[in-house]
Image (tube, rainbow, N blue to C red):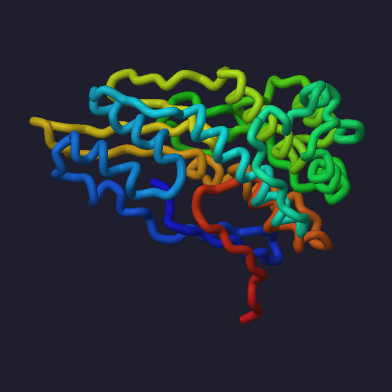
Length: 283
């Protein structure tokens, strides 16, 4: 289950993740009629409500509706135009009426080089590229989750979903899965959403898998007699914050002299919960 918040402390041995209390999602839904629980789950969260609601309805065998594509596009636009520029101390960009305008007339650069990219996002990409040397703040090339509810460290992210894109492969070959790879992965996922190429939601044996802005969302809601008896939930943030996960690996590869950039590294990994950064205090 996903914690409500987490903190990362840099100590002598590197960064240490300290998760906070778990979100009491299961306790809120146990004993509820299935239709009430399915409608209640997305209202418990501020993010990815369409994805979470669809997963709940699919898991319970109820008709599911909602525009996942629009939700992913909207989330990506806010991240690219507002949140990431703010994390870099840059002015936000106006949210475009046509999201495809952020891709540039020629699309994403096949070599992953922001220079010459004719997109309003090019200055942001250039600033990220200039802030990190190749190999800095990179995470390991983790595999995708083998199943929707798999526990542990996996690459369950927008960038991971688009890891085969030529520009991302070019960046990974030179810089690894670092900040520039994460950034262009988000742009590539925006392109996939615009073009209708996101994976389709699935359900098998009551386990739903639904694409969301941050990766794939897995859910199984057990029921008996129309009443919820259990819940098993796996989010992209669960995989991101797992021991050996992408975020702690990237921060471990961030030079001590660049620790001021740690909040930007966190923003590019995009956990769905607040994550604070601090330094270990001497006893």
